[in-house]
Image (tube, one colour):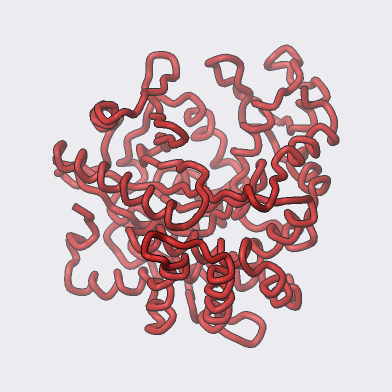
Length: 430
């Protein structure tokens, strides 16, 4: 049972790994459209999942409804608006991450072609209005759809119209967590600008490079809390999550809506909706997964400030963060530790709109990203994880290098194409 703050701290301590056992996990979402350029419905998702089943994926049910697939240590999960997400295995290096992404996308494209469907890899749905997007029978989403808009005006846009890429990294001690979490939080504006890929909304220029980031900043339980910019430790994070309201409690296959109670109330047996039962580790895990901040702690660190992208970015974004957090932590941390928190938060607000031109501590974010690009490359070279051709992970930074040399992100390139193709044909991957 989870009944004390110390129980939560022990849960986080359970994530401590030996440095030699550090893994990398990547999760990334995709939009799927039918031939009429409408987002696919749940019946079509069932057809997609059925074809995945033919290649060794196993169906996961909630009651009688298919909600996910599993194959070895990978899962394909269903998001609120029928976006599908690969939750990748915990792998050793970026070479393996890149191969996993390639194999999955290749299979998804084959299935989409058979069903006459089309894939879009952007951070925000460029076509659909919110009321046009079909839902699905996952029970937790029914409660979230009802409750999330109360404290964040764009919460439903987050749920139904965004796609992101997430990088999951390990820590070897509480001190190591503190350093990595601080660095990843200070890098949020840089990451937002560098990986911006959501400039078109409802077939119009949104006047944002990352409209996804704009949405997440106005999402309930989201954003970049100022306390995350201090030296966060397990106790501070436990205190933070204890005060966050609970969305639901899960008992067997039933999701029970909880109103006006936070996780501390749950720990103290004050949830009459479930007869004042006390939380277990599964309840804690559910709660941690419904906190939508830019970075999160579970039993690993989740970095969540990346718009979904196509092939190049799926290798480059993990490589960037692995190079910094695994390969060059101290040197990177020394730089951000000199930054003013208020300036950082101001850059965080401005980065979705101004992109690489956002000002931060006397430089624009494009210049800061050049500095951290070099540090990431140095870190990957130091890791010296080689592929079959004896090349290290730094080869996966090429796309970032192109962005920084041209000073044009994926979002800006999309806008350039948009001037010539208002029908958005260039956005489809197959």
